[in-house]
Every structure is written in structure tokens, then in C-alpha cells.
Image 1 (cartoon, rainbow, N blue to C red):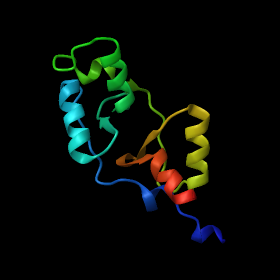
Image 2 (cartoon, rainbow, N blue to C red; image 1 turned 180 degrees about the vertical axis):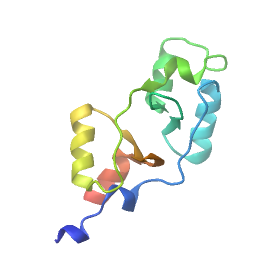
Image 3 (cartoon, one colour; image 1 turned 60 degrees about the vertical axis):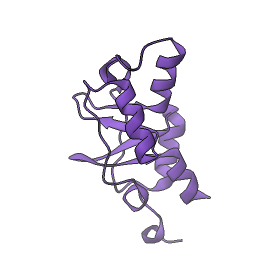
Length: 124
């Protein structure tokens, strides 16, 4: 397979990007994830951040009230990102190295999201 035939992040990423404000409640974030059938939302902050189903699960397991808890209280900050022109093998290696399931895709600004499910589907 020539390098021109190899799928890139841009070929398989989810777009448009789903976001949630940092001051939204965790309950609102979970409702948005369920509505969109996704497991992570970008939180447009500096530094870059996401809230994932794992963040929500941890908050619930800790007995925190997700109806009052702000996204900013549980979001993951300083997240790794992927460029749209990365090959799927490179993204798979990043996810394995960092132990993560979601990577915001950034090309100057956010352009999409890629998940371990997307990677698995395109490499199998």
C-alpha cells in the first residue's frame, strides 16, 4: 500500500466537533454525550481540555453530585492532540503510549475528534 492510500486522521475523525463550556454541569455533559452517541466532548479552554465518559464515571464513583458539579471540576486538561495529516498507525501508537481513548484533532484550531474506536475500525 502506498503512503497515499494510507488513511489519515482527517479521513476518519468525527466532525463537526462537539464541545461543552467549562461552566456547564457534568449532567449536561453526559446528556450531550448520550444525545450525540459519543464518549468525549472538547472543553474550549486554555490549556486544551476534554471531558470523557471516564471522567464522569470517576466523579460518580466518588459520590459527587453531577447535577451540581461543573465540567471544569472533572475535565482532563493539557490533553494530547493529533494533527489531521497523521497516519492511523501513528495515532494508535500515541493512544497506546499515553493510555488515552480520545484525541482532539487540531490544525491551528480544533477541527475534530478521533477515538480509539475509530482507530480500531480503520486498522482492522
